[in-house]
Length: 546
Image (cartoon, rainbow, N blue to C red; front, side, top):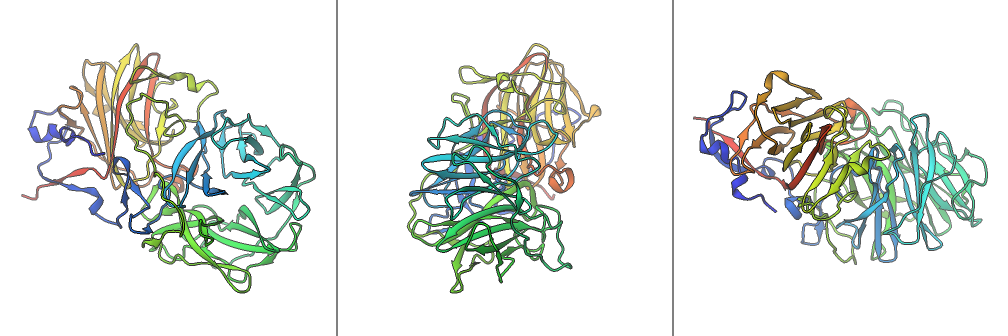
C-alpha cells in the first residue's frame, strides 16, 4: 500500500529551518518513479512489482530481487522453489505456486547456521522432501549437507553432513538402476544410500561439458549447477558454464543427454540454449537452469539473471518457455525477456509476494527478515514485544554488527522505521550488501550519523538529545536519499547527503549478494523497532528549473 500523504517529504514542503547538513531543494511537484524508465509490471502488495499482468501474460522476473540458483519441484498441481541464501538466516525460504508465475513464501527450511549456502537442490523421493545443501560452516572448505521433512512446511531435520568435501551445486537424480545419485560441479557424480542421507560410492567424473568458442567473452569455464531430468528413455543433464557473474555475456545454459545415468553423454547440438549475447539485452549473465513441466503439459525453463542496470538487486528468477524438438532435444522460445509472455496454460493463479510493511505483530523471520552472517545464538537478539521488535545491540557500528535484513526486488522504493533506544545503544536503517559495502543513517542518544560506502562521515554528524527517531531511506533507481523525523513522521527533515549506489554489487565486492534494507543495533543497549513501512515506486520530488 502507498504511504500516507503525511510521509511525502512534508518537512521540506513546510519550509522549516533545517540543520546545516540538510538541503532545502526547491520542489515543483511529485512524480511516480515507476514511470521514469523500463517496462511496466503488475502491482502487488505495497506497490511491489509482480510478474502477472492480469491479462493472461506475465513479465519477468517471476520472483524479483535476490533469488539466485532456483531449484524447482513439481509436486502434483503445486510447484515449490528455493534459492541460494548465502549468509542469511533463517535461510532457504521455500516458495510455492500453482501457475509458475505467482509465487508466495511458505517459510524457511534452514534455521541452524551453516555459514555460506550456495546452490541447493529441492527434491521429493518416496513421499519425503529433501534439500541438498553445499555449505562451508567453518570457512575451511565445502561439504554437501542434507535436510529432510515429511511435509514441505516442515519441520525440517537438522543438517546431515554427507562428507562430500570440496563440492558445490548438488543435483539429485534416480538412475535407471533405481539408485540415488548426486551430481556436483565439475561435472562429477556420487551414489547415495537408499535413504539419501549418506554416500554409497566414490566421487567420479561423469561428463566433460561442451565448450564454447575461445573468443567468447566470459568469466571462466566453471561447469556448475548440474540439474537432471528423466524424460522417456533419456536422461537430460542441464549445466551452467561461462561463470556466474563478470561480463554480462558470460553465464549460459548447455545440455547433454544419455540413456544411462552412467553415460556416455551426448552434447546438445543447439548449445548454448540460453546466453546473453549483448550488454544491450534486458537480462545479463543468464544461466543455472532447470526444466519443469507446466500445469497443462507444456514445458518451461527456470533460471536466474541480473537485470540490466540493477545488479544491486542480485540475480532474479526468470521463466522462459521451451519446446521439445523432433530430434529429442529442446530449445528456448522466450526471445526478448523484457516483453510480456503468455502465461503457462492450465494453471490457477494464486497469491503473489506479500507486502513488506510490518507492524511486528507476527513472526516474519525467514519469510521477510533474516540476520546477515549470524553467530549461533543470534536469533536471541530479536524478541517480538507487543507490536514492536526489541533488537539487542551487537558490535560498535554497522561494520561489525549483524543487521536484520529485508530483501527487496523493486527498482525504486522507500522504507521507514521508528527506532527507540535503551541503554548505550546505537541503531539505524541501511542499504546493506555486506560489512564492506553499505550506506545508511543511524543515531545514538546524542548524535545523528550517516554512513557512506561503509564509513561514517564524522563531519556530517548532528548533535541532538533524543532516544527516539523515525528514519526513512529512499532508493530511486540507485540514487539514495535519507529523511529523519523527531515527531514520529508528522514532519521530516531531509539529510543533506545523497548517494549513488549502483556499484554495490558482486562484480565490485564479491559474494554473489544483493543490496538489501538493513536494520542495525549496536552497543550495549537495545533498540525497539516499530511500524516498518515499505512503498515501492514512491512519489519523488521533481526539482524546479526556475
